[in-house]
Image (cartoon, rainbow, N blue to C red):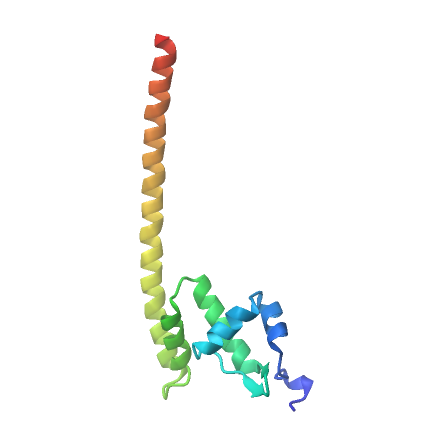
Length: 134
């Protein structure tokens, strides 16, 4: 077993789930998808630093709105021959796409809020007019 000083002592699924704020089911789901590959000792799963790093990347990608297949591609590129450079170039392209999508969504939400404001104004004017007629 690795010494605790190395930072790679294996964690149980309970510790991983607790530390990352996810359920055991979520951790097992990412394992089923091959995004993490814990060591198995009988029925026990042991998560080493590499698994925890990959899980952190998966969860970060999910928070940023990336689909799991894109997250898988990004993580898998880390092991590619060009390694980190390929991964970073790919991620930058994905960031550009995600940013453009979010900026469009923001414009759509702002337009919807403005439309609601106009509709609200019309409704209030109509209500005020009805109050004066009564």
